[in-house]
Length: 146
Image 1: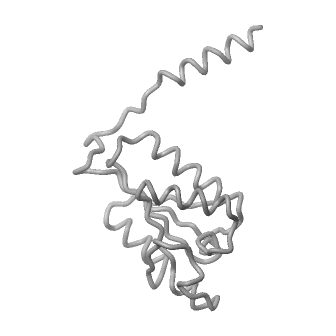
Image 2 (image 1 turned 30 degrees about the horizontal axis):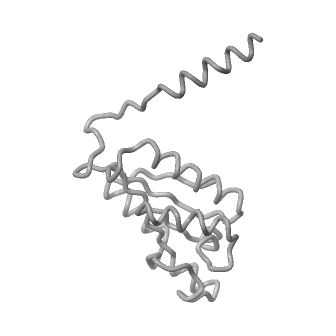
């Protein structure tokens, strides 16, 4: 009985908790900026990474967050049309929330892949890791998918 009461109290506490944002508060003019390095291609890791993006999106007010996912190495596979269908649907859903997905051309060239092998509405950069570095220089907070 004690365990059930404790669980109920925890759930109620979580339901009424709110994130306290640091100053300056995230806004349309000053959004939080996050760049994900996606270099692991297994479905479980990609799914976990997508889940963390949804969690971030739930916490921030609309239009106050920019998320960019740079896929390179084995992680680029997640953006290919022949990847896991359920995961692809989640990626496309994130795109509807203006999450930007960027593919590494160096990886594409190494693997012999073409733009037509990938889902629609992604962008491309020559070197994925350089894109991550430059986004961080531009104020993006880096998150590594693992």
